[in-house]
Length: 284
Image (cartoon, rainbow, N blue to C red; front, side, top):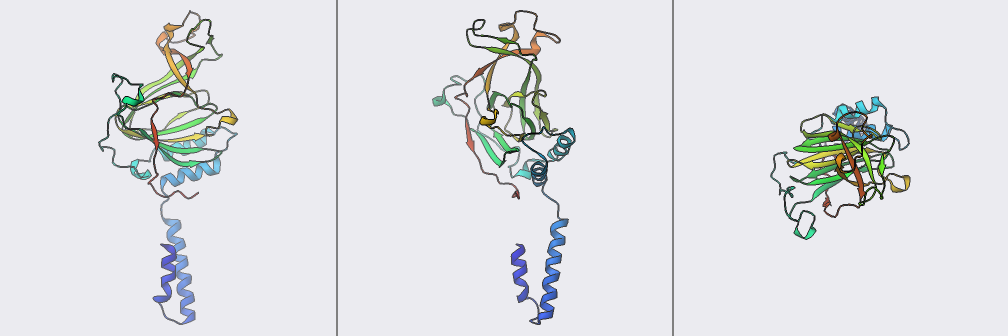
């Protein structure tokens, strides 16, 4: 658009070279002013801060978290090219559906993953959930994650590891080793709502997402998953504390605030497809 404005000028002004020079100079100055004065899309502002201030080796400061979350709090679906939040969707499995783990019987729509940016310092992405779809319990090793629900309602269940580690080995547990974790989040988040933040050791670093309604989440993960750097995504199954509790583990709280987590393979019923970002172009 800007280049076409510039190159049309010779057809609109006098052929006098002096007039042409000043007309071009004025056009360039006018473009510069209008570009600098036009508001920056919020998703661009978020990207610019991430690119400038996030690093793979240093945890974000509280000031940086506040700066990012303050902008994320203002972002809605239209700011990232998503459709109206009340659109109908093909519902996924309910928890009571038969053959939930059988891929052949699946009729649910997949979760759509939309990549906005991937670098050594951060990942910026979106997940669009059909109703009842699930991202199973998983971790974010040595990572900080900011999540913003853009529309709809999402149930979040999240744990942090109990320290020092309390592990029941395979001799005590025929299913395999389990480790004690504390429940820190168990709630439904409905848009509009504030940005949630999890940290390497606190805030619910291990979490599970379940779509109560059709919904979407914008995520910033820093640093990103990187297996050779020790940041591999691991999935877990949780068991009630009473399943393996032998007394003496609980320091505070009640039994229902704790669970034993067992590492599992990537669930076969984790059903995702890649989507295309349709929001304002992000200048990188």
